[in-house]
Image (tube, rainbow, N blue to C red; front, side):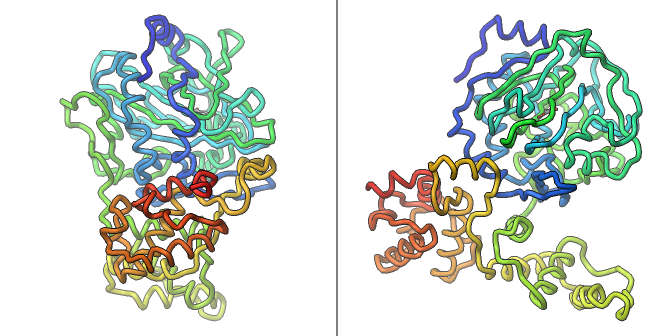
Length: 490
Ligand SMILES: O=C(O)CCC(=O)C(=O)O
């Protein structure tokens, strides 16, 4: 367990941040990174590649709060290694309430100086929509843990802090949207500033402060109070710079208090109706926030959301023609319910009309039924091989350390679940990745066929004792992903 020294704790209170701390190894953050890579896509906008994510609980394209759906992210930020350190910084009772991915592809710009007390709105403070409201005089710490998943260097845009600024509140100035605090990173600008004409920057002169740059290696963490002014310059390297953070607060702080009035649209226009905070340590004696351990999606919806990600991030051969229209209309029925859209003109908008008709035909179908039908259809689509086309992966290839196919843990798990479900004529939900293969009654012929098909998919020779050595989907997938040499030598 990582323990802070007295000097480190003092340093944190003086400067407002601490790091980089060697809390995790690169291998320990591999599943987190893999989860983000699998559930993202690289889009090129105005010649600039950017990494796009989707929040399956809020149903919106955003880099925010992906932990609400993806367990590897929740597990990471609720683990005791992190929580113990936060406790040492002075908070025994903690809610983890937000996470955010910060990816800077080569060529992406700076994130300007900012600090956060109560508002996360880059386009203007709106009292009605304060994100956090402090209910006691006590100056609660507002803690962020930022973890590097790639190398964050001076060249690729590591985070910088202005020491001691957490003890001051700085004003904001209105600027054209192109100059806003997050405008340098296109995806943040698009999602957080939306189409707004104006944004804001902080009234802050960094030359008046001692500024420190904090490069970090994959697995290292930086902890700061959100009130400490921080910024990161543009990525001038040819490597991606991926980081993810999580934010923690005392349970006495009201999170999205406007939700109590039935207003579920937050300051970034995200729907927070299903948002929840996780109690990661101590007690919540206040009961003023929505605190849960996991989201409220049932199994059908989780499966549906996973299937939507297969389409969204193109892990399956995308359907065409009639099948595409059928899948799209089931998606709309599942998300929005009955079609209330006005009938489009069939001559002027022939395609739209056909899509509208397909959705209209589903009138009366429950959301659950639509989800089930959608999931079955998407599950039947041929899977594509690994879609991980990030620069990081490419450089891997150039180094020769990875060759051929290299699907990640999640992808292999999904392949095995689909395979087993088909073989056993079961629903995919019935397949538990932690249950040993032999409990599913897999005979030796089945095991041999499974290994043969896996070899064909991975384009790799595998030992006949594979299922014996790795008796569950989980252990097998973990060991197949990235540890191929070990397997071949068995
Ligand atoms: O990752 C970055 O460059 C900025 C991080 C940041 O602003 C934050 O975590 O609050």
